Length: 257
Image 1 (cartoon, rainbow, N blue to C red):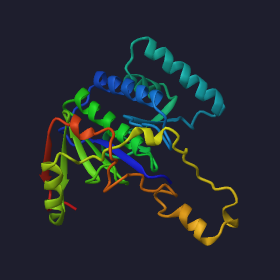
Image 2 (tube, one colour):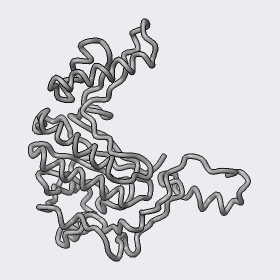
Image 3 (cartoon, helix red, strand yellow):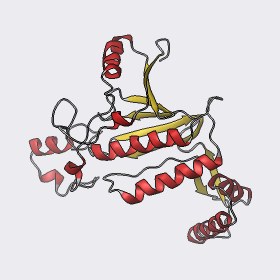
């Protein structure tokens, strides 16, 4: 699988997210997904994971999908928010849901496969930053399997970010990032204008030499996508998300796993 960035709003009793705020985030997400080219996957922030109800034997799968789609359009035309429409579809027995999206104990969650496209990683985090302003009472945590987020994990809140420190050996490194206002890598978007789309198969892979196969595979989490930065985890020039951050903080959680 391609390298991912995960994002969540944890249901912890402190975070609050209204239907109106969520609909605004959903429209913003649609704009990002439509406006930009994505290598391996798009934004997938969800408040519900939705599945057609399998306990409706009178309808074929295609008929049920069409009925759900039509009914959802009807409900939204009547002024239902996305969450209210989903709840109504479940009440009518058309769907089953998992509240919170892909992950348990969340108000919303999702992930985006970005592979080695660091501009896609930039777009994901820029979207999350804007979402934290739209929903000012909801902290959005993000974790990067790659290198765009230099601390790996970060929490977006009201346009600022917090680094969660649970390893005392990383304290000086985190403080350096905060002092230099440099938690996110600088990315040159022009490098990704013709970036190859993610593939899960390689033609005639078994016929390649061992060295060629090794150069393609590298680490399983990247599947052949190399580090694209120019120097020390940054491009020489490009977009700098750090300049859009309202505040930088460190939260010490040394007793947590």
